[in-house]
Image (tube, rainbow, N blue to C red; front, side, top):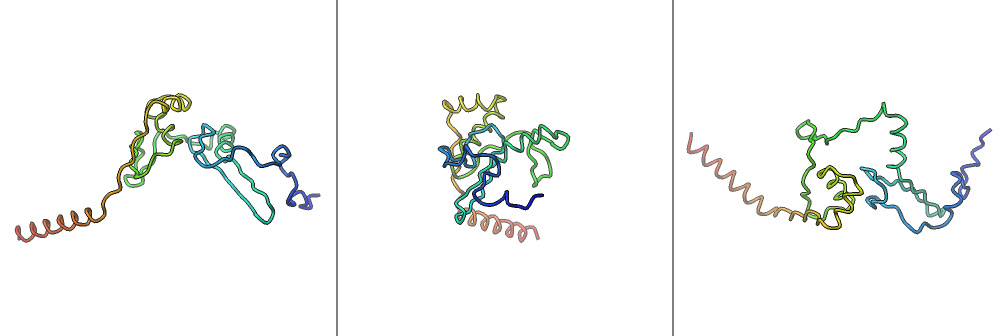
Length: 159
């Protein structure tokens, strides 16, 4: 009978006694330590128990997908909610900060039709796209106001 004692803090519930020390490599989202398209790291930590559970959820899910392919749709495109369509061409980087390395590698692999490992090697010689400066909100507001003024002038002129 399971009395729940196997779940007491400090027990090696997963049989991971080899990992009872602090790891040298700390997994983080975007660490590019696996080839999963969508890197996801789950982390649960409790300072009162001095325990942390870190899981490469993406890798576990990849194994599940292999076992249950009938429940997986891998679509060669992304769903654009604004147009209610799938887009098959990767969007160009348009953020005001550097593209994260793990995304750059995967985007290059898709755009060039190469493997992720080939893209990593190519990235050593090809610079990532530069950040796009954030729009000047004041300038946009002025342009919008000028546009509205022109539109009202047109409406008055055509009335």
